[in-house]
Structure formats: C-alpha cells, structure tokens
Amino acid sequence: QQCQLATYFVVNKLSMSGLSGHTRRYNPRRSAEECARMLTSRIVNAQSDGALADFVEQHVGKFDEIHVSTAANKLAKLTARRHTITLSKSQRDSVLLLLEERLHDFESISARPVANLLWSCAKLGYDDGNHSMVHYLSDQVPRVVDDFNPQTLANTVWAWATMRHQPSADALAALERRMLACVDDFKPQALANTVWAWATMRHEPSARALA
Image (cartoon, rainbow, N blue to C red; front, side, top):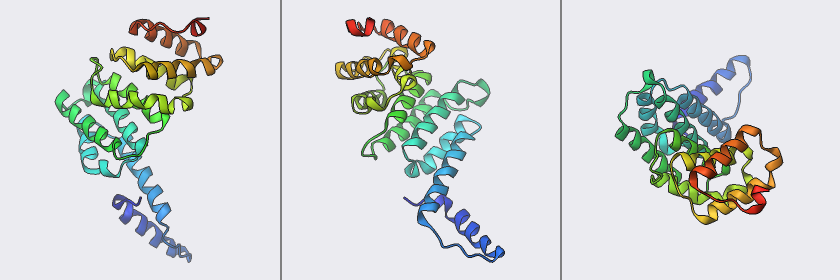
C-alpha cells in the first residue's frame, strides 16, 4: 500500500539522484517502505500524548499493525510521564478507539502486536478488564499463541492480571500449553511474573505446569 505522506519526500529524493548522473526509476514498493519508516519515526518521536493523538487522527488510515502497536505503546509511555500528559482520560480513550477501529481493518493480527497491545492497555490503566480492545485482542491469543516467545507470554498474562481481565478458557489453555512448550527458555523474572499473574487471576494451572 502506497502512502501519500511519503510521496513528496520520495519523489524529490529520487529526482535528486540525477545530480550524480544516475536516474533511479520510481519504485512503489520502496515508496511504501519509506512511508512505513516515516510513520514509525513520527510515532516514536511524539513529544506529548496530544501530539501523538493529532498524528493518529490524521494518519491512522495508513497504519499497519506494527504502527497501531507502536502508537499504543508510545501513548502508554507518554501517559506515564507527568510532563508529557496533555490529554484527559476520555481523549486518550478516543485515541485508543481509533487504533482499535484500525485493527478491525486487518484480516489478522500477528503475535507480537497482540501481546504488545495488551501490555499497553494495562499500562494505560484499563484495570476493569472490560475495554473492547482487550476482549478483541484476548480472543486472538489462541490463534497466534504458537508464535509467542517467553517474554510475550509473560507480558500477556501479566496484562490480563493487571487489568483484572478474565480471558476465555481456550485462551488460558492455549497460553499454558505454549508456556510448557518453551518453559526452558523462560528467564527467572518472566517466570516469576507469570506465576504472579496466575495467582492474581486465581487461575489454577494444570498439574503438568506446576511440576
């Protein structure tokens, strides 16, 4: 997907290449890659939640799943710093809603964005566990769980516990099965976070998981 945000930059960059005596043919794929990098750069370099909100509102239709995840992560980090907060909670909710609506435009979401977005929701303080994005993302877990690594597993169950969200039995079973498959790769902190989360959620793991 090409991106109009990058068109002026890319065309001029390609035109300037003629100064060295070499003419480069316009490459749509390269243009899309330039666009994706510029969107990411603008997101990660936002100086306040208000600046990020303005950018999301203007360009969310060009976001891929990584941009959505990065924007939510950045919003969570900006919200945690007193000097970068300019929005009310309802305004931040509106930003998250735009990101959630964009997620529904994709046929599927991969594992890392699912885990990162759940982590961001937890950091943003959705501690009632009932936000529609939380439900939507949690429902994706059984489909993507085989691509989870120990860190994304720990982050996901930590987010559920922090938000007091009760995922489906299928999601919990899938997460536990994946954890058993890669338990030898868990770092002590990730393992401790997972055990804490299970206890907080009052989830009783299988006997095999406790062995």
